[in-house]
Length: 434
Ligand code: AMP
Image 1: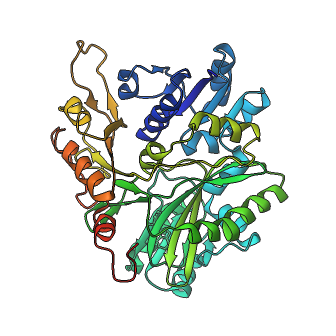
Image 2: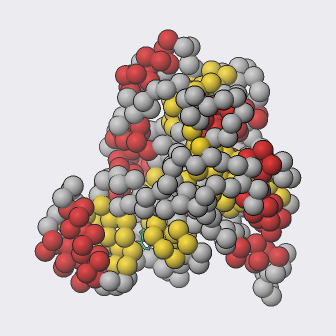
Image 3: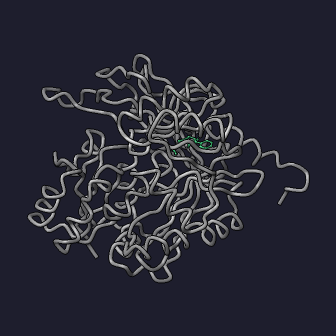
């Protein structure tokens, strides 16, 4: 059945969602708003809508026969775009404003987690410098300081330096409360669950790389790469998180009259004391979607439509065994001050490498550009190069082979995406061999 779908957002995550929606059933009609020049170059219609303006989005959907709206980024969710659409009877994949506070307010998320008895780190909320200081001393180093509200990925600082922690807190106290959290040590994994208000089904896990530099050094970024599946996050971890975190969290929201329809993203730390939730997000991960969506063998449009309409029932999303690795190609200066406007060379060559799909993020086309001229860099994270392969090592080597095909001045990548996991997969330790 053909469905007319509007996908909101403009990054590589939305590009990956669009490719997956088109793959399962080429009959679907897609519109991307605002999308980007790479999405447009792949033949998908893009419209210059402000995705966070609920009224405009609802008007566009009503005027253009849109049957399902898929909301990619957090900003429109926190702004309540899903509520406006639902009030007009338009099916939408994504939670309403009240539920989006799980991501939009870290203090709200902690309150819900406490009410639901979810395993998570201890946290203190502070609204003054004195409160923050006593929280830093109570919890000790390493210090974790977070802005309460959305801060475009810049609100979190993890540091051993008490003065730096305090300075970060002082900066964000000008905008609202600050959270000081217990440091959680271990491997981090991203888990995704589709929810329809009653039922919940898990997707395949991914691991992403938040720090800018190899070996997890340098500043936090939106994410420099990812891989899936994650050998560390087996069925036991999924079952435990479903049982101890996701089900009770959705029940706690229901107790507040909140019906969650969309994807719940659990950022998990596998600590020596067991898995603990670092945070919830209310949308698909970016760049994790660029490795999870290509591995999905079920019909994504059907799953999202069923989540939107409350009819997930016993849906069981399935994934191919093949691995996927994605490497983010970033602009010079990212994440601090990315240099923009450089021509991107080699895109077609990269896309011809076996198993590779190039997802576009910060790319643009100059208004007067002649036909066939290269796209230009227009954001910090420019491209996301994903490769599939029979194992992580093959997917990883294909991804980096494709990365070597693209260029612009100052392009940089992390060179260690999926390296450790690929090594472990091909050299399992004694006792872990299948
Ligand atoms: P968040 O925006 O809460 O996901 O934080 C961004 C990143 O900071 C996370 O993905 C972690 O890598 C790190 N982080 C956040 N909270 C903690 C914590 N309590 N302990 C250790 N690392 C953390």
